Amino acid sequence: MSIKKLVLSISCLLALSVSLFAKADTYIYDYWGEIEKSPDAYRVVKVYYASELGAGVEMKTPTNMFCKGDSVYICDAGNNRILELKYDSEKELKLVRIIDSFNTNGADVINTFASPSDIFINEDNTIFIADTNNSRILKLDNDLNFIFQMTEPDDPTYETGKTFMPEKVVADSKGRAYVLAKNVNKGFIKYEYDGTFSGFYGATTVIYDAMDILWKKFATRAQREQMENFVPTEYSNCYMDNEGFIYAVTKTFNEWDLKSDKAKPIRRLNALGNDILIKNGHYLPIGDLQWGNAAGIKNPAKFTDITVLDNDVYLTVDETHGRIFAYNNQGFLLFAFGGRGNINGYFRQPNSIEHIGKDLFVLDEVNASITVFTPTKYGELIYGATEDFACGEYDDAADKWEEVLNINGNYDLAYIGLGKAYMRQDKYKEAMDFFKLKRARKYYSKAFMYFRKEWIEANIGWVVAVILAVVLIPLIIKRVRMFIQELKSL
Image 1 (tube, helix red, strand yellow):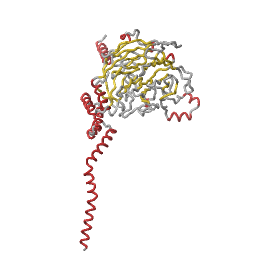
Image 2: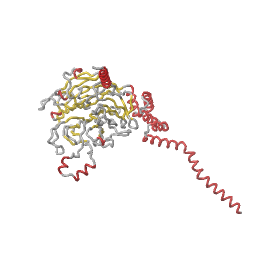
Image 3: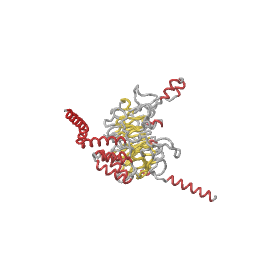
């Protein structure tokens, strides 16, 4: 081999090694939609595989996770089992038991699972399992005793003729189950506490193009049959927060509908199934704003799962780029991190995200692994400032935002957070300065309104005096002149 070829080969290997071991940079977007590098908000604690946990064979097509208390449940669908893990004070995951069957209590039902895709444990410790290939949702007690099963709805509103394949399930405090099933695009299938079907919930809005409607009017029957029907899209995953609202994500949309807010890839559904997600940020919560073509990946973010912390910060995982995006309850991006790859902090195909406290667990379907993340000091400060403000501790919130700025002077949300804190402290002029600096027009206008009101109240006395002087002095002068003229005429 020539020296030239040898040098070229070494250069290629070095470039490859740099790309393989590159750091999973954390970033945000500035006001102009440009990426701003940021300190790490999370660090990797450890990456776990089933063999390291003592679970025997490696996980095969793991589909979803659920956390409650200090327990982590993983649906190992390919092995027809559910792994129950314990997350201890040392931030270690340990296997508690393998759930691959349940007690039938004499009921004439199959007591094993067939590709269990999801698990949810309610406040009363009842267990709901989406037993996908057995076409049912199981309800069990805490000791894995069978209570009842929910099967395909026998109702005219439900389209029959397709295999019933429930994939996701959550339940409210009353025991009502909300189920996402494959090939069902009417939203969640809702079951009452006794397992009876009660209708659909939160159907997505139909997205269509005006040109398609016009074209259909003039197309032949054969052409219309070949065209895509205008039907609601399916949700890809869901999470029920501590207030009973369901967060749902969808990855079925047209790219050009993202920035116009027609796609709504993240939704927060109220009791009526309406989307009430707040979007006060500079940009919509859609993940990456720039869809380049790095490494052949050019699509926008497609969220496969979502989790919501107790402070109302919600985090989504994107299967397109392998990234995690965190937003506060106003829709501002707090940070994004991760990527596609085989090193710690990167993923090949992340499909589920959960949390215990503020620690995150991300399930990778292809790698069959669980990555555990814990916040850094920088991340804790962001969370702390957010929580202090929500609790009315505005001085503490301002102090934490200042610490954030000491670490990262380009963090726009810290300036906005300081502005909000000062506004709550009635320091409107200082608030206006911070809002103006980061072009937060909505908040600037609000602070200016209060500043103007405060200024008028403080200066109303001399303002009225000036107004009276401006009005009365000309009248007095006019009367004096008239009086002088009358005197001269005498």
